[in-house]
Image (cartoon, rainbow, N blue to C red):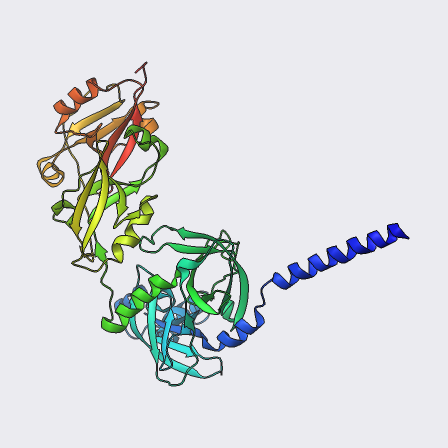
Length: 472
């Protein structure tokens, strides 16, 4: 009897523990009910021009183009040219996305890629009303667009703060995946500060919330019902959800939205350097204790960086007192600095820390470095590379360097990733003037040590690391 009572007690304790854990799981129903009305479906239409080649053919053959009766190509010609050779009307492409209402008078936030190139935008509200929308402004760099519909007393979301998010926090998305309006999906924050290719000015929130085509532009909520992100991208090998979703932090979005609302465009800070990630090999070649910071591979002429004394080979450690752990940390920080504002930048140069003050300027619309190349051969060497002098035009554009003509298979140059067509600008942080200067510098390279080599490739400069072997 005593034994059975003991088992009963254990069962009660375990059951109570289970109830406590169950009660600690989040309740999403109220959150969806309170905020779902402010989430909208966005559909766009884009007119596609009639096929230029077929129109040209029609002009060459004359207006009375006749399709032979019974011709096996009859239907094909009719598809492209229309009946009797008349050009077909413009086609229309449609796309679906999501968005959310940020003000009672009709301002709506969505993604730039949802409305890009659209000739017509239609917003469907939760009460089934469909309203035409105007693009107030759209920013490709942050993938944020601001729309406006003519309506009042609309339901709105509460804007939160993503900086207080922690990895593991519950979050919820509402959107229109594949056109299924007001679909709610939940998950947790998987990581913060994720940087993705071609998105230099956004550090994303990574979640495992199920996001699919059509969710783009929809809100990501915390458990307090506040928008802390805008769902933007997924990582997928199939085109569908695979557990990796990315949202734009709401602070980034609102910084852009406020500018779009005020002027219809975004002014973004510009430093004027090309940077690259510091690998363990690069850290070793620069005598760094660990691979942190952003390595300056190129300083753009007449840029804020050049005016304030930045040099290729500098390692940026902090920007306005905020540490730069990865190179991708820098662009979002610079981009948010108001144009004309001074910024304090701590760098490491030749093993010594130094502070530079730089006045941030506006990001130019285009910024394309110069290409290089031309004539006169040199023999192979300990690097395993043949180089030639640059022509006068390339030398004037780049200021120094030699063109790589050939890389010896299996050589230190090949192992480092050097390729024919690259321009060698620096070896071991010393400028290379011409072929003769190149020979002198290669002859004195230390054996067995990692050497930083600055290369101009496809219009931009970058550091690679090379190690000269004893048997070379």
